[in-house]
Amino acid sequence: MLTFRRFRAMAASYGGDLRRWPEALRPQAEALRDASPEARALLDEALRLDDAIEKARTREDAALLPTDESGAALARLRSSVAAAIASSAPGDPKNRRFARPLAFSLSLRWVGMASGGAFAVTAGLFLGAIYATGPAPDAVQMLLQPAPIEFLVE
Image (tube, rainbow, N blue to C red; front, top):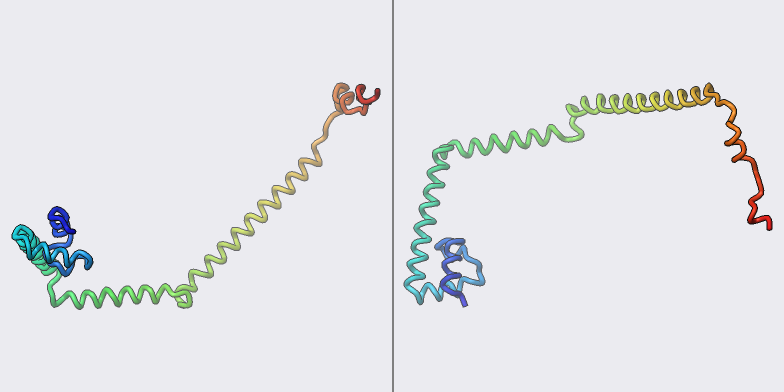
């Protein structure tokens, strides 16, 4: 059952016209409206608020854009959007002029990375070839000599 508190909240949310209310609540709202003068007064107040909002919106729309110009403005907007979409199509010859420089810049990027990598490998090989180590100290040579491990000999 729809309580008066819930009825007031629904009127604040959906307004005074019961046709805008959720379909499941309409029969209960109509029954409460028919039975309660407070509910009728609440719906009348909500209808007055709805009318005031609609008049303010209409007045604001009329002030922003006169009625005779609104259709023309909408048509201009639609045509400019359609032209922008059509010009950005991938098969458009106008867009091909951007594809070639992009591909060229990508190929230059790969050439740069490949030549940089080749230089790094060459420099590494050259430095490795000219780097000479001195003889190892005796302590290191003693560690590297194979010797039997004493606890495994027994």
